[in-house]
Length: 366
Image (cartoon, rainbow, N blue to C red; front, side):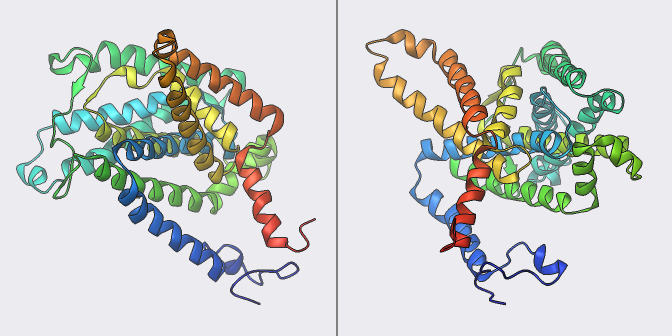
């Protein structure tokens, strides 16, 4: 069998070949080029604005990854995931600003990395708390439960109590030099980009490996038919709650990473619309696909930025357009969802799959 490509009619001969990350030399070459692009070319050719867009894409990928896990792979609908991003962001911020770390931890730059891990654990456990009703309810009722997580966490607990810690009012200021990883102070878009890309790759690889394991197969079985899965001996409550924990864990990482991109953090950074936005990302990218999470995030961020760039030149003639851009953005978001559900219901990942198959099966692409 060729190790460069797999022509039509040639199949893998064992489990190791079938589940290898990079199955051919061609794929290894593509991944090497992707690595060079992500870690060297993009930081080299991008200005501050372009890097901020890349950071926004990474943040969206991390946020949508947990939503994809719950909806796409476990069949648990959520409309309150921004709450768990908020938990991760606020726990990390409080640990960095308020917790009395030993001097050696601060000097070695370990406070922020440890705060990310602790924030992820806290967000995961908080997500499990609101995932408990999934043991008894599903569908519309589970949607209402997850929406309650948003309103209870952000609008009540964080806004009314957590934000008041230290007498700061509604926002926590993050002075320059606060975010530090080892000897590196995260004080520029390039450094934020490198931290974001590393954590995004780690989270994506971790989720993909989970989906290739017994846990991932149990999640998919529950998604397809939870009654049949339970008859087969799968503890559906255990695996549902595990899915909520992992999704919240990743959301906590996303929130903790996002604070490195902000000068101050407030509840306004985690509105309910952001939860809806993350669901829209996986609908556009493709439900039940890790590629869909990435493609959907890139599509939504780039399209909305392009829309903003198109509105700005018209601001002099129609100043109300710039003032009402938030509503224009929401309208464009709704139109994008409707368009994809009508014309491309399987999302961008399905189109990517078709393009790959076209080239893999050429010249017999038909």
